[in-house]
Length: 263
Image (tube, rainbow, N blue to C red; front, side, top):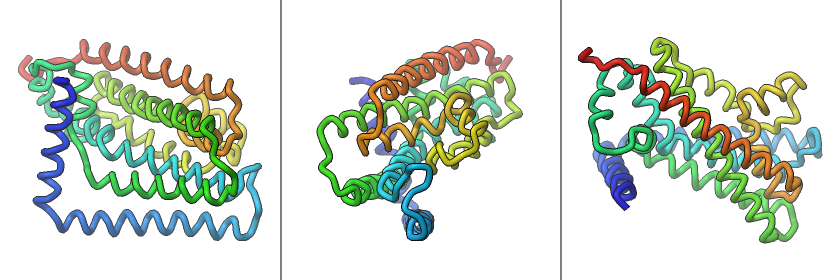
């Protein structure tokens, strides 16, 4: 309950900051809608020329796009802002203000992961949910409880993979503060808006096993459409658990390398 109260306080402060700068809200809303509209329009235009791409129809690709938007929204809502404040440019590790975070009587990983929120990302979350609903309607088939449960499990696993990768990259900054590892991840994450199967073989391997951003969107989309084998779902959950454990270990190892700004 203590941690939940802390999260509630962080969210409340974020909304207060948002209300203090209302013009930023409208500018961000316009930017979000333009980006969403152009991306969706491009997909509709593409599938007006072909029926499917590597077995992916318009409805299944919409499911993938909706998943991508929801993951991007969750990243921008709290995971990205919090870890960027720690390991990004002018972050706490660079400036040495991480000392104050270490002194607080709360788990460091928890505090570094949830303390900064961007409420405007909720708009992207709603848009992503809308695209998912549109994909289900376009499929023209009844959505079963099994598909819903499989999608929920796959989406939770995808969020865990996303968090684990960003946490691991943030942990690497303890070894190399001058290199912004998250910038490298951004380039790969953009590729997750398209099915992994459309990429060349070598890139498909990279997006599946090296930087598994393809697993984050492809697996939930397949689960929603009913085209995901149970073994693939179990594999995604196992991968998420392994990455989460590994990233946590890497981050805590990096903490021991941190030299105080006062030392």
